[in-house]
Image (cartoon, rainbow, N blue to C red; front, side, top):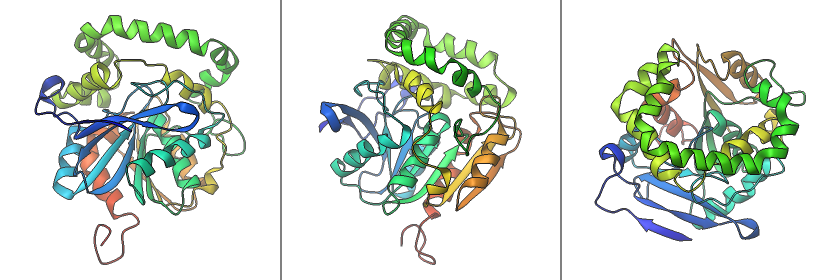
Amino acid sequence: MSLHPRSTSTGHGGLERPTLEGSIAVRDGRRLSFAEYGTPRGRPLVWLHGTPGGRRQIPVEAREFALEAGIRIIGIDRPGIGTSTPHLYPDVLDWTDDLRLVLDALAVDEFRVIGLSGGGPYALAAGAALPHRTLGVGVLGGVAPTRGPDAAEGGPIQLAVRLAPALTAVRVPLGVALTGAIRVVKPLAGPALDLYAAVQPAGDKALLARPEFKAMFIDDLLNGSRFQISAPLADLVLFTRDWGFALGDVKAPVRWWHGGQDHIVPFAHGVHAVSLLPDAALTVIDGESHLGGLGIARTVLEAMMGVGATPGLGFDG
């Protein structure tokens, strides 16, 4: 495990750097990179970034609450982002064998996990594959299955389903091109984010206009994702395949938040997925779109730290 303890300097926009950042050896000679925020010896919570995104895609509000409440937030890069070795898993479930190695290296036994958007399927996979270690699963506007009996109909993800064969064939060269394009755009990261925000629905536009969120996204791009950014293509390929588990296999309790006006992952997909999970509750984020979950980070963390806690003893007793 290679580690980089926090320095006294800050990242983009005055953001504090992670308390710990580095990479961990996983299977087949590969590595996964990670970043930690909050309380170093606090109660562990794994945060899985969206598509696209990286290990620093964690709201400032979540980082601050983690310090207040004694929570250790661990952001993990998927293969092909930051310094994580590029790799295409056979299915989403297979990634949990790497997750297990990361958790062991960081001396994490029981944990909670939150997945934003494209991180949702990976969070659910943890709940299915590691039921004795996963105290709870949180999903923020998560992608729903596209194959098999659990598949949800409609939505923009269906475009990826139709293009899946071509996407699989060109994933590697397209990833190289995307990484090169991102390096060119990085000096214009701020204006580029403003341009993106300008064409988003009202909820996401308002969130992206907040200085702390803009700083977080730019910091994640300039630092967390600075080496490579082919992970989103691997995500899209895996989302169009069978995930390797059924939603009914997720034994850990799931709390799902979804923007009522989500334009990327339809709200109906959240309703559909929650209806198939054995122990799940859905919260509608009224008037918000795809990134709405990021805007209620404190509420989400408060709820998640109560999931799996010993009754009457508060957060984990």
